[in-house]
Image 1 (cartoon, rainbow, N blue to C red):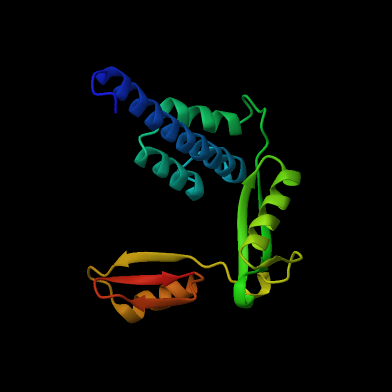
Image 2: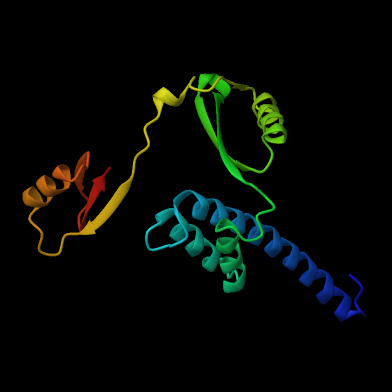
Length: 175
């Protein structure tokens, strides 16, 4: 504590906060770029892009940064090529673990993931060694407001839902 230089304290505090926000903005921009590459540039038709944009707005990311990340996926400024990789392995006690990574360099990511598995008494497995134990599921919530439970359940199952669960004020659709 300097006690006499208030500006120096403010400068240091602002510098730390700006560095933290910059790190978050970079991570969110990568998520937006990958989501836009995988599902299209329109958030109305790409739910993963819409979620990524909502996360960015929740962190007060400027709209210019969001637009730049989407444009990058559309072909402009295509310097970095990020891809999503899934690693499988076993944690302590034989617990099955699936790790989803977003990386621009596969050769750097694999040893880092292997190191984390080793550090916490696990081991990295071969592709497919634990994925058969997992199912990709989704969950949707619909307010009851005048819906008949039996009729709604039949409509949802006909549309491809696995199950409809009554949660009090709403139905939960498991897909």
